[in-house]
Length: 79
Image (cartoon, rainbow, N blue to C red; front, side, top):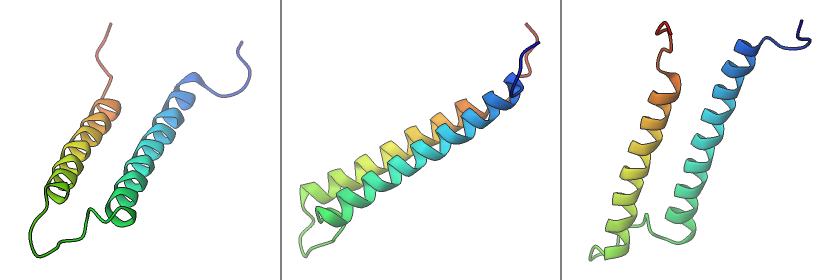
């Protein structure tokens, strides 16, 4: 008999930790790129850097949400 945590509980907590970590990494990288490097600020004339920043932000958010969906979808299919 295995001692310690139940394997299903470990799997569930791992999902929580990975989801939180990837979300925090995405948030920190987008804030760093936007505020520290000034890519989130709008100037008089839209620069290509601003456009690429927001385009990359939208694409990376879509990929993050896709990761969340695939991680948290129901795995109740019988095998």
